[in-house]
Amino acid sequence: MTVTDPTRALAGRRELALLEVPSVRRMADVLAARCREPSWVRALVAGLDRFQSLSGIADLEALLAAARADPAVADRSLAGFARALHGQPDAAVAGLAMAPKVWFRLGGVPVAWRPLPASVHARELPAAGSDGADRVVLLSLIGSGLLRAELLRVRLGDLGSLDGHARIVPDLEAEPLAVRFEQRRGRIAERITFLSFQARRAILEDLDRRRRAGLGTGPGALLVAERSAVAAARRRSGALIRAGSTLNVDMCRKTGEFFRTWGMPGSRFVPPAAGVDGGEDP
Image (cartoon, rainbow, N blue to C red; front, side):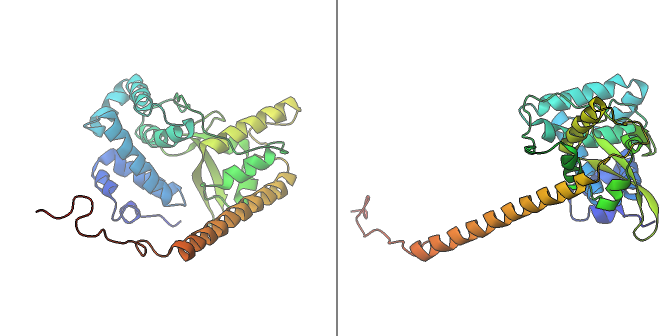
């Protein structure tokens, strides 16, 4: 199994200094061993740095020791972090809170993995003409590093929170929602990754739909139960890519037209004549 070196993953970044903190180093080492994407090391160490600075925490090791003695300390620190992020969208709060939640769990503190309070709801991906299953496919692939074939093998029992060794604790309500999957490209290995806040929301909505329809939602049920959703997700993905490409081309064209009309910045600047707008001193 290829293991990412956390020091190399954070090379040139200010957060590299946090690896000197033993609990942060352990978190980075565990993530490097369990996650395929080195981006999770970078994102979560940087998120922990943000948690420390916005919460005014002077000593992470002291906080972790206090939380081990009384887990309520961890919950209070997360609540304070949410207050510091007041006014930010729920998706942004969830993304930033992921780092301290992972750090607490890997540090032996059974902190709750549930969404922190947020006053603003992020805009959802439009679901017009969709039963929700294709949104699960599309959003689960974005940012997670999962391949489509890997996603299609994931079962509901593979979703949840993490224990102290980064093993999955089945929990469909977990936030962040961690995923256990099998890597078959190269050396076969069991890996973990995390789904976005939007993907978690889409999954919960789809599971509610499946329960109402009398479909199976037990631990052995596939996350993507309807393979037709894959084709729908590919069509939607293609539409999004085409829309982005069209917008990019249009912006480039408009920028070119502007410079053809007005010239390069400063090309039409005419310096004021002497004595104008105050002129020279007498």
